[in-house]
Amino acid sequence: GAVVSQHPSRVICKSGTSVKIECRSLDFQATTMFWYRQFPKQSLMLMATSNEGSKATYEQGVEKDKFLINHASLTLSTLTVTSAHPEDSSFYICSARDAGRNTGELFFGEGSRLTVL
Amino acid sequence: QKEVEQNSGPLSVPEGAIASLNCTYSDRGSQSFFWYRQYSGKSPELIMSIYSNGDKEDGRFTAQLNKASQYVSLLIRDSQPSDSATYLCAVNEANFGNEKLTFGTGTRLTIIP
Image 1 (tube, chains in turn brown, orange):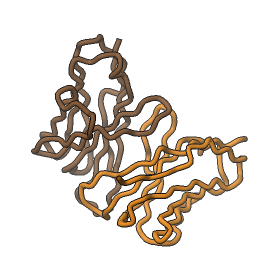
Image 2 (cartoon, one colour; image 1 turned 135 degrees about the horizontal axis):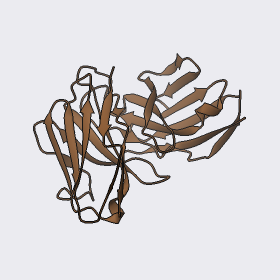
Image 3 (cartoon, each protein chain N blue to C red; image 1 turned 90 degrees about the vertical axis):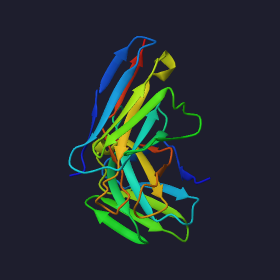
């Protein structure tokens, strides 16, 4: 149980294009999902908290107009990197908390490696 | 500001020995604690969760929590080369809800065959 699926796992795009990453909770409902970014040999950096049916909460320094988050259902959140640039190349990971468990555990998707040329 | 501190390592341990990973946290109100394992190029995987003082064992893994000292550790017995990874400590201020986890920077563990 508590499986989180993320797609695509790898994406290469040209500078200036937009890229959408999907995060799905497969066997549980997730009222809240979290989006992280991780650069090589660095720890996870929380970008935003995605809340089902409401606006995402962004961490300080993260541009909400550049990283669009939509959490339209209890099992799906999407992150769109708009007008991507080479400095946006990173490993993006989503995570979700099972609303049916009172344990606080986060379950992570497989991650999406974005390379912007 | 809530902080979670880990020794970044690298920590090298001979195969078959016990690996000991440590973590301290600043928020005395923290209630739930987690250890994640992350292989290079992969996303974190939950290894252990612990909520009350004392030890919690799961196979070769033992988590230890001391809330008075604001300290949580992970012991890996009979270390295997496959245990080589970065281990992330994470802390939550409550046992449930939508609060975000605060992660440490991770300890890189290498098991030497």
